Image 1 (cartoon, rainbow, N blue to C red):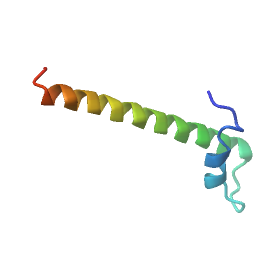
Image 2 (image 1 turned 180 degrees about the vertical axis):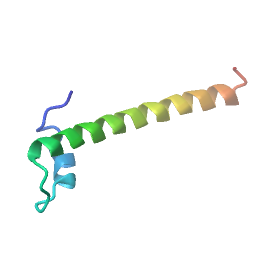
Image 3 (image 1 turned 60 degrees about the vertical axis):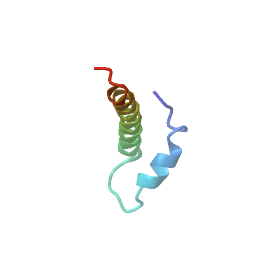
Length: 59
């Protein structure tokens, strides 16, 4: 799991001064967004592998 410092770019993007939500909630949201990004990258790689195999005639 990444540290709060490593997630600062994401935290800065989703932080709103007028929000009643505390810093911990922002950190949790940053963790979720980071994990979703990681999952998306893994899916993209898997889709590429499957597409290559299908194009090559391998089931």
